[in-house]
Image (cartoon, rainbow, N blue to C red; front, side, top):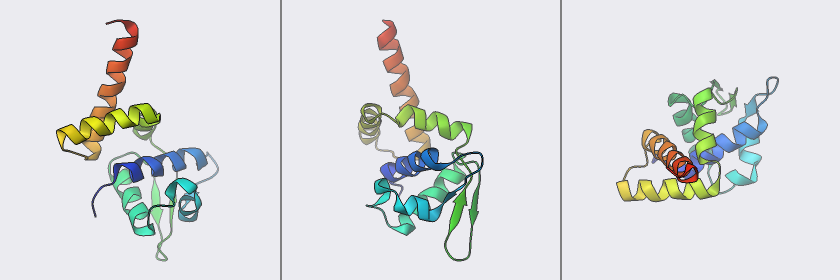
Length: 126
């Protein structure tokens, strides 16, 4: 399956919204969220797995019935999401990635950090 940056971002947004110290995020919670309505279960599960392998999710438990539980975002996941949360930043990141021709998680992370850094420098007059 091909990585869909929008699905990855939406998974992280839903996890951030629903995870707490006492509440893990269930597969059914992701599937029920309106942000996820355009994605299949397989696409969502794939992006959960990719986010987990990339160190963006704290812990994921998989079950035989195709269910899963997500504990939370990692500090890296929070940082990544903070850089791409705003639609303005996200659209800039996607524009950069399109020009570069790479939509890997590593490229998204680097582009997001670069976009935020450029905006900070612009606002500081540097």
